[in-house]
View 1 (cartoon, rainbow, N blue to C red):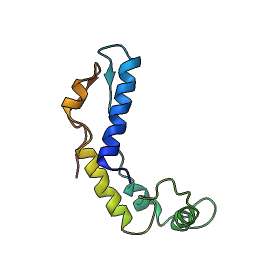
View 2: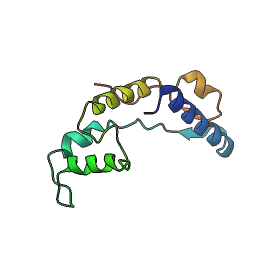
View 3: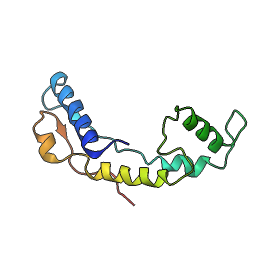
View 4: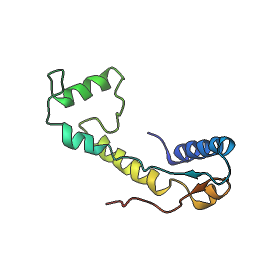
Length: 115
């Protein structure tokens, strides 16, 4: 899973790039990360279009190393750990001090509530 420092570095790298191509004063919207547990919660008891239950598809994808969302799409406690990591990333997403060094305007106030 992506660590907070890795995530933060990737966000700041993206902002650095945008700072070189966007006019000064441009607005940038930060979209929150999505809690993928909702996928499992709504799909685990359904049949995939190929005719098998979704958990079987997720397990097959994991076994062959092709599960695009391994942290979310599995039947064990990793989903819970992924949710905790998501909260950690959201809580440490960025600070106003990081954003202020760019010429972009970015909101430093969270636009979502964590339940």
